[in-house]
Amino acid sequence: MKKKVAFICVHNSCRSQIAEALGKYFASDVFEFYSAGTETKPQINQDAVRLMKQLYDIDMEKTQYSKLLKDIPEVDIVITMGCNVQCPYLPCQYREDWGLEDPTGKDDKEFIKVIKKIEENIMKLKEKYAIS
Image (cartoon, rainbow, N blue to C red; front, side):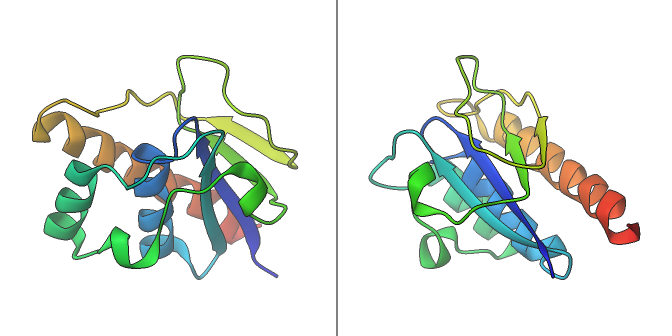
């Protein structure tokens, strides 16, 4: 059975959404992916949506929306994005914080840096669990 991974942050509109999309894109053979927050936004960050379409041809608005922690199933692995405040708590077997800066309001270069770091982290996570 696939392990369930949740990417969580406060608003569930940018980094955690990117991570959910890239997780599904690169590692859905190993994991089931979710993202959620303690608050929601009416839409996913539009710069993230645009760049994910441009870089990976992923349309996050078609497959994802901003969710609360209570809207996702129980998970095995929780990954916090680096909230700069108290990260939300979700029970799990394993927890990791990726400490990513929120690129909201910054230029494309900063967004792409965060997107590529998330991709790299997902590949490391996949490598770690694909073997076990």
